[in-house]
Length: 169
Ligand SMILES: [Fe+2]
Ligand SMILES: [Fe+2]
Image (cartoon, rainbow, N blue to C red; front, side, top):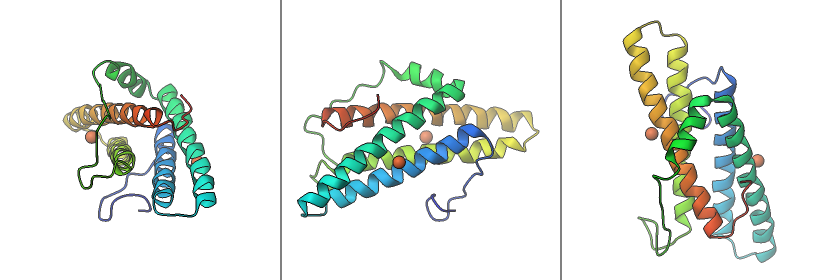
């Protein structure tokens, strides 16, 4: 229970694609932590170092995402499907809880983390399930969560490139 919200059951990543999802979660935790440090320090040289490392973590996230799509055909399908129906303009777009734009990327990444955790948990449930109706419900929801991952990933990529943050893509 190292990375989930407190009280939230955590699935066991017993297949490669879900180990990649756990790796994505690890990158998200790092990126959000560096962003927090970057935006809460006035030590310029340290901020520059954190920005450099944060950009590396963002690149790692992109590399793991590409690997995930390669080994999960449904994830790849969702990646292709969402192109065109997500359109986000970040101009004058501020966080809901404050007037500070810097909270937006961390919020989106936390959302992505939740979607990844959901897929890991639900696929773990299915790994020992033998009922057809259980499979059908979980499978439909899992596909939705994979779609949410792609929609949110699209949004964060757009945000990062809009603000000149280096990504792998
Ligand atoms: Fe990393
Ligand atoms: Fe979802």
